[in-house]
Structures are given as structure tokens and as C-alpha cells.
Amino acid sequence: RPYYSIPVRSGDTVLAVLILYLEPGHKQDIREIFFLRTVANVLTFIVKLYRSEQQVHQLVHYDQLTKLPNKRLLRQHLTHEITDSKASDKKIAVLFLDIDGLKRINESMGHELGDDIIKIISKRLQQCIDKNGMLGRWDGDEFVVVLSDIKFADEVFTTIRNIFQRFLEPISLLQQKQLIISTSIGVSVFPADGSNTMTLVQNADMAMHTAKSRGGNCHQFYTEDMNDAVIERLGIETGMRSALEQNQFELYYQPLVDIGAQKITGAEALIRWNHPTKGQIPPDRFIPVAEDSELIIPIGKWVINQACIQCKQWHQQGLKDLKISVNLSAKQFRDNTLPEIVNNALEATGLNPSYLTLELTESSIMENVEQTIESLHKLKNIGVSLSIDDFGTGYSSLAYLKRFPIDKLKIDRSFVQNVDNNADDKSIVQSIIALGHNLKLSIIAEGVEKVEHMNLLDSLNCEESQGYYISRPLPKDQFIEFVLLWQKGIDTDPDINFDIYEQ
Image 1 (cartoon, one colour):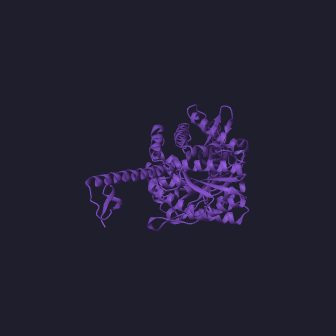
Image 2 (cartoon, one colour):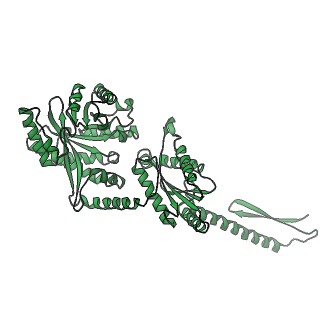
Image 3 (cartoon, one colour):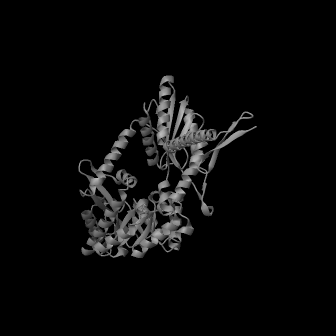
């Protein structure tokens, strides 16, 4: 039986074949072939148009990395669910997830690895969501889960527990390494926490940031007082941006004492913010905001510069042995311009590098150890001393510790405060001192608050101490007075009481 066969093509690809059977004895006509080819071309156009629409829909509504719904589709879905829930009196929960520490991983190990982690996590999260939920990637390292048709609170808690359970599973990396990633989750519920899409998402986001401020790896339901906290945080961030220009920051100095010689060896520089209307704002209120907003870099640079200026002034005033210590945040330490900032501050002031100590937390140096070693050597080559702050609270490996070009270990105050009456704390302090000495490091104990602490640390051969028993942090003029009185007091009366300078 005769027939026509016309391919429907898209470029070199055959999409379909148009077949038309003819009646027996039908005489073929070239015009019929032209017509069928026209039909095939129209079909090709329709298929291409359909595929283009599908591609546009995919691009507009789905995240290209994870293939999950994106922010636009999540908003549309949540808006639709809110409309349905208003009619049926059902509840909706919005879970706002942020991957803890992913930004640090991107900075230290590369964005390609960060993208791989996001893809792995997205697949695991999909296994936690049932048919009443939608999971999407909101932005960067953030995901949103919309749980519809909620009847009982246990349904939300079950999903949260499942998510945390999946995050406990290690992520396998190259070279047989494994990584444990955690998440912070904020939760808002319709209608109690908002009657529209924007409000529900914003409130879940606020709750998530509250969870992160508690250390991460936890969840937090939205409460109304979070709005006040967010407003305050924004006020602090805005204020800090002008604080540097308006000279509102000030350094206080807490003395460091050689325990055996009973001699002040230097001080730790601690920043204070003298706000024009709110008075002095404590560091624990503005430093976390500075770290989150990237303001810690210019503020940290200011601290290093001012500390070097002050130490040089002490030397010019005759206190030539005094040294200065400066804390570095994890973000400062990972900043590629840090060695240049330190070197410029030393050159500008003429301070000998050996009089400057940079303190880094144990947790910050354990992120990407190989890069840490390289960064520490860059700083060490300048000639400054390096100290690990809050030692004992992190997860330092002895094998890595031997490779770090550090000079000092600073025992965390949590072990020192009860060292005179707690056998476990005494054993920990004794072990840290022995470990440090075996590695040829000097030891500083912070949090020394009474004479019993000082005496015990002396018996354990701890070199230096710092704490309220010696003095609170002091403004620069009072610090100079304190040092001079200490020197006079040690010469004339070893038991002189300096409590008046702790106010």
C-alpha cells in the first residue's frame, strides 16, 4: 500500500515521522509532498515552541544547580496554599534553613566543593519532605520548606527531626575525607506568625538567624520579640558604619603578668564602643554583628593599627618591655590582606614585630588546616608572635598543633575559674601546660580571679596570667598608672592591693 513518509526535524535530530497512507491506485502529486513538508515544518515549530516554553519555565521557576523549585515558585506555591488555608482553616508551616559554615567552606576550599555540598544536601532534604510539603532553594546556602495542611504540631517537629538526622550523616569528599555539616532552622506558622507570604518567610528567616546566634545546629520558632532584636541589630550595624569615622571606638588594656617574676609583661587590647547616645556598648553585642556584616575587617584593621601605636608610645614613655596582644576573628584570619595590614601597621609605627602578639581561636585555625599553616607562616615571617586563644575548648589535633608555627597557648577561662577546687579542671590545666612545654610553647592562663588561682598556676609552672585578680581592662591612661603603681608596689610591698583599679 503506498504512503508518504515525511520526517519532523529539529536540526539534525528527527523528532517524529509523519506517515500518510494512500488509497490503492492513488496517483502521487508533488504538491502533496510540498503540503506534507509544510505540515511537518509547522509541527517542528510547535515542538520547538513547546520545548522553549518548558525551558523558560524551568529557568524561571527552578534552581539550576539543585533542580529544586526556586524563590519565585516557592512564593507562588506558598501564596496559593495560604489562599486555600484561609478557606479551610488549615495551618501552614514555613521552615527557613541555612547551612552552617558553608561560606567558610567556599572561602577556604573553593566554590566548586560548596556547590557539590549543596547538591548532596538538597537530595537528602528531599527525602525528609512528604507529599504535603514543597522544598526549594531560596538563595545561596538557604533552603525553604513549605508544609501544607498541618493538623498537629508533631508533624512539624517530625520534619525538623528528620532534617537534623540527615545532617548527621558525613559528606564524603575527595582523598577519603569526610565533612559534617549542620543547619540552623527558623520556623513560622500560618496564621499565627503572618497572613501573607512575605511576612511568613521574613519571620521564619528571623527565627533562623536567632537559631544561628545560639550557635547553630538547632531550630527556633518565631516569636514577636524577635522583631525588636532585629531592629536593634540593624541599628548596631548602621551605627558601626559611622563609628570608625566618628572615632567612637576605644581600646582598653588588660594587663598580662609574669607569674614567677610578678612583673607586668604587656596587655591584651580589647575594643570598646562609646556610642554617643547609648553609652558604652559591650563587645559581645556588636562584635558578632560586625563579623556577620563584614565590618569586622575594617574594625579589625583599626584595632591592629591602634594597638601598635599604643605599644610604641609605651616604649617612648620608658616602658620598653611591654608587649601588646590583639585578637583576630576567624574572618580576619582568612582575609588575604591580613599580612599586609599587620606589616603596614608595624612599619607606620616603627614597632618591633616581636612586641606584637596575634591571638587566634582554636576553632578558627582548624578550618582547612593546610591553608591555616600557610597563613600562619606568612604572619610568622613578619616577626610577630602567634597565640592560640581559648585553648582547650576546640578540637585541635596534636599532629596539627606540632605543625603550627605558634608561640603560645592561652588556657580558656572556663578551666581556670575552678582550678583550685575542681580536680578535673586542675588535671586539664596541668595537661595543657605540660603539652605546651613539650612543644616548647609558653602558657598564659586567662580568667585568674583570686590569689588561689595565681598560686596554683605558679606551682604548675604556668608562665603568665590575666584576669580580674590582677585588673579589669583599663583605658590607656589608667593602664599606665596601674603599671607604674604595680612596679612601685612590687618593689615595696609584694602584697599590695590593686582592687581600686578594678572599678
